[in-house]
Image (cartoon, rainbow, N blue to C red; front, side, top):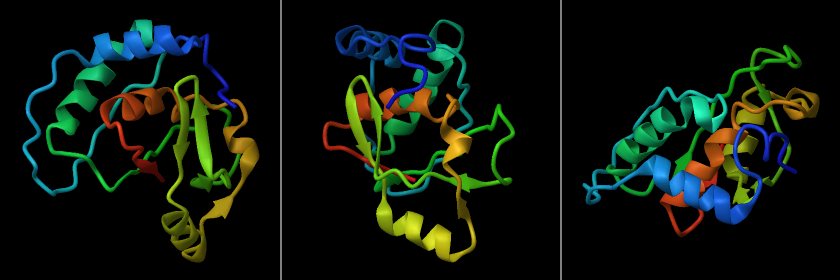
Amino acid sequence: MPVVAGMFYPGDPDVLRSTVGRLLGERSVDRGARESVGLVVPHAGYPYSGRVAGAAFRRASEWGRPDAVVLLGASHTGLGSTFSLSSASAWRTPLGDVPVDGSAMAALRRAGMQVYEPAFGREHSVEVQLPFVQALWDDPVTIV
């Protein structure tokens, strides 16, 4: 379930879709490049950081649809180890579910990363990024 929908970003799907569309602005044509793209995107409430996040995701989308989006979020609670994983098979926003790349997550677990759900219980840093990912690509992109 979304933790901060209705607080950090709109909880109503129609309002969220409209807000994210406005924050993303006009998108240019897909360049079609198949390279990795990295972003550092703010994760505050949309009134504070939405324009910057929208511009970053819009720019990244010019490189084409990614195979997966890897999200590293801050831990505002301090719960969990330096890196913690969620066992969720999908993350939900008011726009629907975002599927998790199960094979990538399994590889991270084999490499020693631990699943620790309490780290995500009240954390917003990843969740607020997801509506941008959902709005950019019609075919759902998996996340890690």
